[in-house]
Length: 173
Image (cartoon, rainbow, N blue to C red; front, side, top):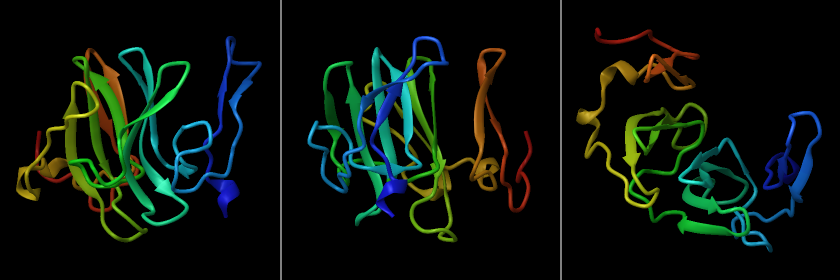
């Protein structure tokens, strides 16, 4: 149901008291009346170059799986890349991290449960132009089993920590 897909937003100065910045407005595939992303779940939200970013996700109406990119500068939302106009396929349950002043997008699911997963890594220095594998042969096979993973930084490098691995880590190193 639509109430499970949200596009509201809260902020807090102390982590205890929260202020609603935007109400849930029920927008589905179109931008909201305030011009922000449509209601969805399982998207990525992160801060990069002084803006809040939202990308990917699972929507309520077709196309269900998104690959749009939105930014918020504190005053207005902007759709940087429209859904369907991106080099990486629509995905949800993916991971994003910032490393060496670039956005890194890792894996995710392309559509319904049981449909397989992406094992790719995409990189962008501006959130608009993305570089990634040109085909499945270029992916790192060690990522194949890690679909719902966590990425953390330790000693100045990213680590993928497996959360759901169906076959175990393939390859070595």
